[in-house]
Length: 146
Image 1 (cartoon, rainbow, N blue to C red):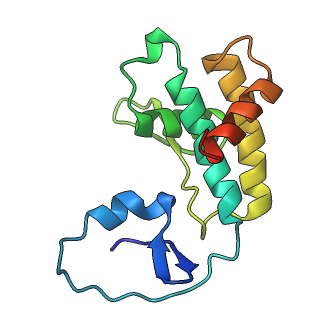
Image 2: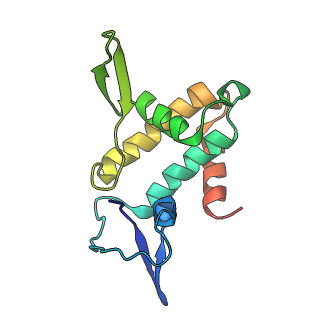
């Protein structure tokens, strides 16, 4: 099952950037059933802002992180920001897994906390020496298509 987030427009619906990858998994002509609900727990614009923050950090990451793909990068930021579950592997060592940040699993206030903590992690581990105001300017420019 996939979840799609749609945006109502004057001419119909558009698939949100958040859901575009899932939408592309559907085959042309494939019939699907959809249940429409409002993801009222969170503000979609802030969700986009968070992913723009991750994009800015990923695009400017240091060379030693070049082997890390975008999905692993996102999960590492979320886990280091304190949003993780733990379990142990066969050797008894702890495994840290990033928690889901889906609309239904995280309310707006918690998501804003994740954003702030992620900014701190990005400054500390990824964009050393950068100031949050500089990163925020780049995030907003990316959101606005500049």
